[in-house]
Image 1 (tube, rainbow, N blue to C red):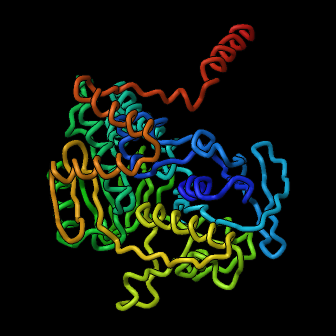
Image 2: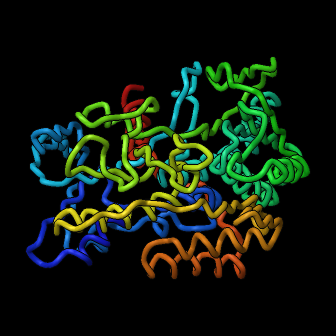
Length: 428
């Protein structure tokens, strides 16, 4: 979206036509997913409808199922399953990443991914509905299972989701007379020896200390061996039941690259040069999580280093890619992409955070303000910025909403239940 916005500003009328193809009609600002899962931000406020900001572009809602760049042809499958071909001159590949899954038994059936706004909103309702179910049962084992929440993956997404969800649940239990915060069991599982590798080891240790103080159990150097039927088995021998298992163990380049004739590296990412052109291919560019772009800021330390899969790089790459596309159209010189990673900010729940920016380490409330301030500034469009700030402002004066609208995922459930009762009555 960032690239397309820049292209429609820089290209003159009649100079080119811009076509955007995406399975979704909107862009999602992923750093705000944890706050959506906690109900701090309305889900619709972190998505930007493509058609409202790309007025000079043709937006096609569909999935690119195949690309044959040699013939400049893309095969597009629309929501109805119909396949059409689209011819083009220049290709900009920005298909991003998807959740990286592992062959863990039960993962696909029990794991809740955390990559889309739909998954974040679903997770909020799911956690609240577990409190409802636990409050209504007298079965001790079932109650324990319902109140056990597991997050697998100790990167930013996992830590922020865990902290935000626990904050929300701890607030909600005040309205359940037979449930206390101590009844809930929150667990983080990380396969490596540290969490949040983007920050310094000291900041990672600080984060673990804060999570532990809140009663969260942290398992390091531990893998999930099985999740079948919600029965969690860890590599250290631990076993317990959980009705909520969130999977945030990394991302991988969009697998649609396997259906193209474009070159990929050993991690199945699009191989690109420092000008964001696809290696060995003319008139094709790549940016964002799907691409392996040389990190020129680390060239002296490691000539093979590539840019990390982060929004910080993706948005900046998008601008350079758009500029280089315009340069290609006009026969001018392209420029290299170079950006030294500025650092990271993360929320650890309401009023708590960590930040490591240009080597300056900040903790607690100041880091939390930095996290919110940075991301609201980076959120595309003024209207979305205003809506998000309004959500935060209203939260200062009104209580959290603790209603679980999980029936949204099953809109016909009530009607089907009524029909089933009527059928049973007639049969009797």
